[in-house]
Length: 468
Image (cartoon, rainbow, N blue to C red):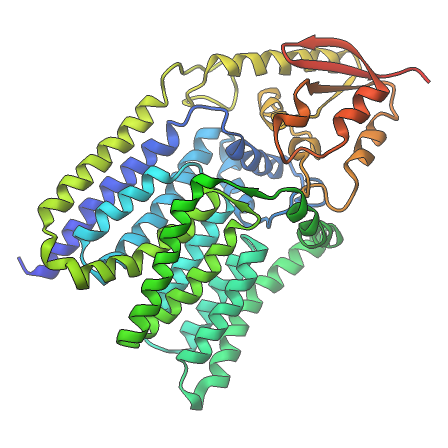
């Protein structure tokens, strides 16, 4: 058996292992991860005919949710969404493993990729952007052609439709690489082909916005509201420092390899790496820096291979990979402590739940009882989308009632508007001001000053407007 065939078989084997571990990691997450539910609920809304921006407030781009809504049209269940999430994360990991293997060997790639699986959680639009960034890096290394440049433009535009800020920077960064990589004689045509590729998804998206009547709402949410989001949702998690350091080491490795070899693929990697770091703005935490960190391993492993490769044997890779695989399985199994499976909740079959889920279900049923009496319950809490899911409802804009996700409208406006009806009831937790730093300011004070408590459940209070 020649070396190439052996490496190919090893890659397939390792790819299966990584995919199974990621699937276990994602599918066995206990119900209640709000980052997952917020995004899942938007795809649920799309299946009910709601239009992003027009009917559902959100500060991010719609491509991720539009894609993930498709299988939910066939079977609307969280397990379907998680299978899609596992497929996306597995695709990313396999492309990353292939890229690292090309720089060193599959024996280096496996433990590196398994270490990133430990850090992965639920998928979101940032991971979709990362997928397109990886594809751009891979295609940058293919033979120059105008067809390739068109495809690169398409990938860059799709990245921008996944996340507008980082994606737009990526479009510019890739344009710079196209200019650097092209021969002088065909440079202008190469750039034009790239821009033609960028224009295709953008034109289709424009048609979508006009057809759905959401053009003006899109600009309000995804451009002007960004400034509100950035000023109101800043975060710096000190636990992300180590991961930021790894990302910076990757950039230094790029610079070193560019100077040493002059290989343009490291220029491509450097430009994309610098772009991916912007995902962590303004929320600097592990969930937002992990993409840049994962990408940084490509030059880091190359650097290790060159300067320490003779000391690293496949046996070491097997040992480290085995420990990491055991750690992934342990985390997945440990997370199941205190959970159980039930068909009681319509969209949660095959999903591990906890007793807390039952508490939220009781709130959902209590809300439905009020609705049957002709009242309208509005939940002002970070858990609104969770309660809506258990009600089999979508209640926007309150299912994503967060700073920056309401467009440029003052959050108090929405409260004033719903309280115009005497049949409105507001459900809000006592710890609303501290529940989530993304909760809009002033809402708790406005409700408690203008409403009285008529009912309660645990830490939640039901409010009705004071008689005028």
